[in-house]
Length: 167
Image (cartoon, rainbow, N blue to C red; front, side):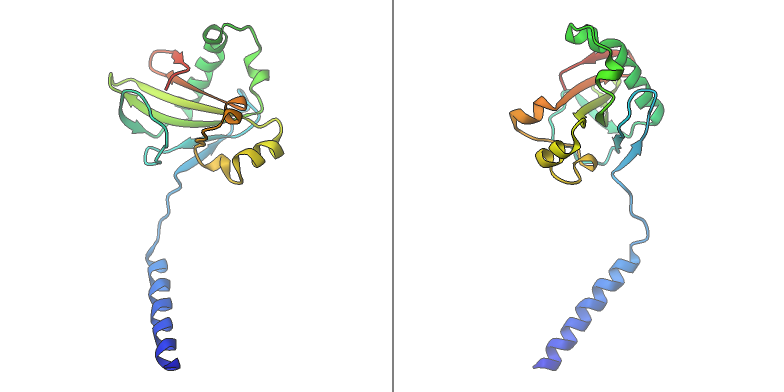
């Protein structure tokens, strides 16, 4: 009986090992971008295949934003934030410690949109306790009032320069 169990375990382990060797390419669902011109934290660009757990209005399809797309979205954010929010703050210094998460969406009119989620990382220990380890590499979806105290989401149409707080 011991021999049969040992042989079965050997077959299973060999099968698992051979499948692992056949896997030659692993694609990351995201890439990291650093844009010190706009902020000090990192930005995470999620590719078009990354499954996002939020409801986005009028999506035609998804796309993987380029760094140029992200720079355009950040310029629009910097120029339009005060108008949209009815404030008069220094956008760069106010949001320099906010991690960005980016998702590309083509809307039903064919315009390229970037969903930008900002997470305040001024106190990393607090954010790690609230969101858990590894939160930077996953698009954060949290149904809690506390989450909205430390985050904001915006939809930026990079083809037209428009920006809204709705998804």
